[in-house]
Length: 302
Image (cartoon, rainbow, N blue to C red; front, side):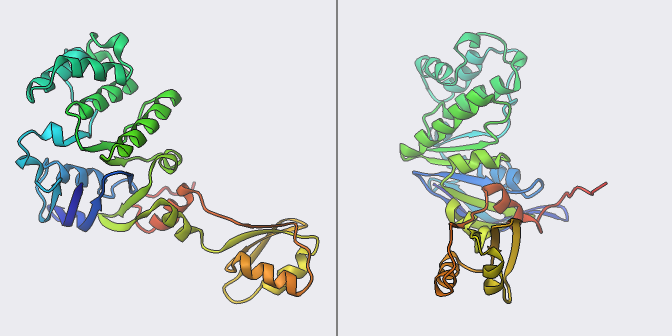
């Protein structure tokens, strides 16, 4: 488990992380989301003790990272896949890490196979593609068979097969009771992988909730209705705080009224309904809606 309490980090006059508290629990995949400049990378560095917090505290499995006698067995992390000796082979890179913790050569070989680098395991890692470098970084994170796994953009550079493999791996690790904490900018992939979300913006905590609740909060009451009496139903549902748009002659989309209430109105006025569907935002739409005031860098229309 990862536990952050009132975590704060200042770089001079800039506050990168602002009084953030959260817990990343075992047994589920927790996604870590935020716009560019939100403080995600700084938070991950604070968790691993690569930076010291200005205020607050963060622990992994009840201890600071630095206090674990064998940290690779406690937490495996991927923050920068290119943090390797470019002249070493993939196998030798992992073997050098393994020797610091008494991890066997067999474990190294097994991980080379697991991440799909068997054919290039003895080649210099400096010549690896971005995707191959990511796979090597993931192998390094798993080297000590840790209870906690923390990965920053793990699918970056992976092909579709690799993305699918990564998704299944993360869910498998969580099913084994491990703590899995993953950041990503790929909302479609996070929607398929994560069970819980921690979202920050401008260094502040925006959401700490299940993915279903996060999307539901952004969706509000939006309903698609198909009826031959669309115009009549539109007049019935319109009111304060209610908006209605029409994309087809017999279809309206209503926001601000529940599907239950629309159904009741239709029944009361004997209006035939061919469709009554609550609409749910995608994770990407929900993320954009809930973080639009926390984007540090915004595009300007031409």
